[in-house]
Length: 135
Image (cartoon, rainbow, N blue to C red):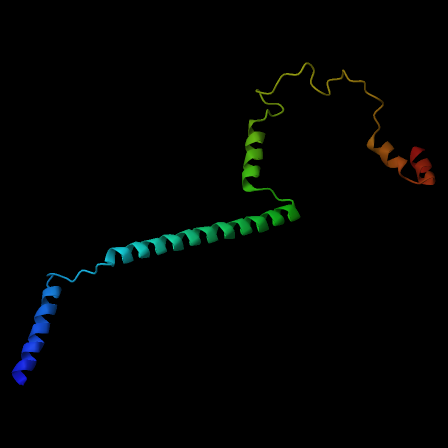
């Protein structure tokens, strides 16, 4: 009885030893099919993750735009474009500005009688105070 048990034990052990040493393994006929299914499931999960990310980013951009509209802010790209345009625009007094025939304020314009600051302030004072300052 003992001998039969040892033979059965040894027979099973040698079979497992062969697998451990890199010997012939039992090949699953459906292994390739299972691997293909697993790869397809991974691809689907990745696609779903990407779609979820796209939806979340769209929602975030919607909220950002609402905040920009509420507070009158501009997008970073719009700011950069305006700054770039301002840098490229000719600057008054720059050597690259377009030449004008006569610069503004050189006396060729019809100058009406300019009021002084005191005259402007006097217009808004009550009548008795205006008389006091005029004397």
